[in-house]
Length: 156
Ligand SMILES: [Cu+2]
Image (cartoon, rainbow, N blue to C red; front, side):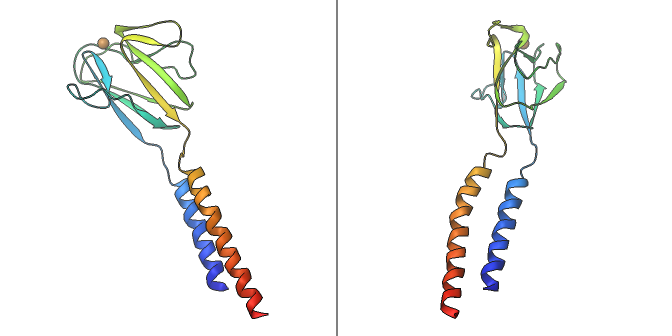
């Protein structure tokens, strides 16, 4: 009985710890002529997907560029135009897909999208693992409780 209770407590502590230990992260996005990507120039272009509360750190590798969000969205930023060496941070506090562009080589289409030298930041709710952990934890909890009840029935 005590062993079952303590193992349930251990499980709860573990689940809680895993659910709350996801901390804010920073993703680097390279800025080069003429694109934005998680990969450096010459490798496949990757637009990042980040967790809510994470930060994107744009790092200028080459050329004269800006990172500028399109108008009318819940996230808004503008680095201004710079050459290397420069970097610019923005922390995302809203979930969604956020298109942005270089004000030198790209443009705001005026409808929430961007063209030319442009990219997107996708922000997903954090932590994505919490519902999965709870889904996994509930059956384990029920199994443990059933086992306790069975032992109790036997000992009477
Ligand atoms: Cu540019």
